[in-house]
Image (cartoon, rainbow, N blue to C red; front, side, top):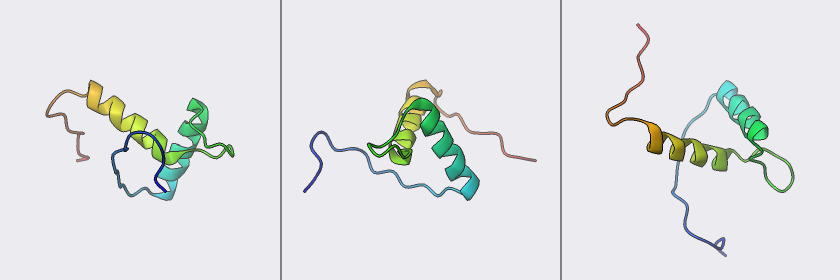
Length: 66
């Protein structure tokens, strides 16, 4: 049975172990946790992407290492 409410966008990313640990700690700091107290990575990623979409200028790209 699908969850109630609006459909959420599907997002798929690959994270290193360090990236996963950072995401978990950030979610815990922000209070983005599941009912059992575990960090909610999916919701944290959705929040970060929504923030980026609202605040990043068009055409922005990260600087590549030399």
